[in-house]
Amino acid sequence: MSKIGIIGLGHVGRLLAHQLLVSGEGDDLVLIDQDDQLALAVMTDLQDAATALAGHPRIVIQDYAALKDAQVVIVAVGKSSLIADQPMAELTFNHTAIKQVAAQVRASGFGGIVLNLSNPNEAVTAYLQQCLLLPPKQVIGIGTVLETARLHRAIAAAAKLAPANVSGFVYGQHDGQQVFAWSTVRVNGQALDQTINGHQLDRQQLKINADLDNWYTLQGLGYNASAVCTWASRIIRAILTDEQLALPVAIFQPQYEGYVSFPALIGRQGVGNLLLLKLYPVEEAGIKTAAATINQQLAALQRMDEDND
Image (cartoon, rainbow, N blue to C red; front, top):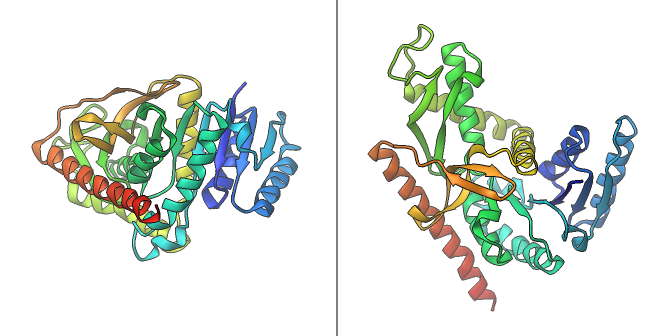
C-alpha cells in the first residue's frame, strides 16, 4: 500500500494528482491547499474521474496528520505568474509558504521522502530540508531533470533518433545557471565530437534548441506543468519501487557545500550513490558558480527568517 501527499493544488499539483490517479501510483492520496474550496473541488473532480478506472484510491483533503505514514510528499506551492519577468521572483513568495508547510509536515510526524517542485528549486529544497529537520537524502528537488530531458530531445531531433538513444546530464541550477555537461553526453554510446547517425552536431545550437523548448512553453502557458508532472511521477515511481534511477535532481552535494542539481541514484531511501563522473574543468567551474548562486538564495531565505523574528 502506498500513500502520496501533494501540498499545493495549482496547475502542477492538481495535474500531478490526476496523473497519479490514472496511473494507479498511489493507493491513498492526501491533497492539501491553502484554499479549502479548491481542495474540495479537486477531490470531487478526481473522484468523478475514478469511476472510469478499475482502481479507486482513497482521497483525503486538508489533513496534515494523514501524512504521517505517507511514503512520499510532493511540495508544489508557488505563484507561477511571478516568473513571467524574473525566474527567481518566487523566492520571497515561497518563503512564507514553505515555513507554514514545513511546520505542519513536521507536526504530522512524517518521516518519508520529500520531492520539492517549488522554485527556485535548489534553494527552496535546501530551505525546506532545514525547516523539516529531515536528513538531506530524504529531501530532494526536481532540479535539472527537465533541462536534461530537453537536451536529450534536442540532440535526438538533430540526429534524427529517439530520445531514448541519448544519455548525459545537465547540472547546476533549474531555470538558472545550467551546466550542459557535454563530457557526459553519449548518443548510441558515441561522444558528440563524432559523426552521429551521419550528422555533425553543433553543441551551441543544441543548447539554443533546448532552451527554446522552455521559452515556448512559458510564452504560451506562463508555466510548465505536463513535463514537470510526468517527471515527478517518474521520480515517485523510482522511490516506491526502489529503482535506483539516475537523475540530476536537486540534492545536498558535500563537494559543493550545499544543494545543487547533480546526478544521483534515486530509490526508497531518497538519494543513494552520487554519480561522480569525470567532467571537463569548465563544467566543474560552472557547477561551483551555480552552487554559489544557490547558497546566496538560501542565505536570502534565512535572512527573511531573521527579519521576521
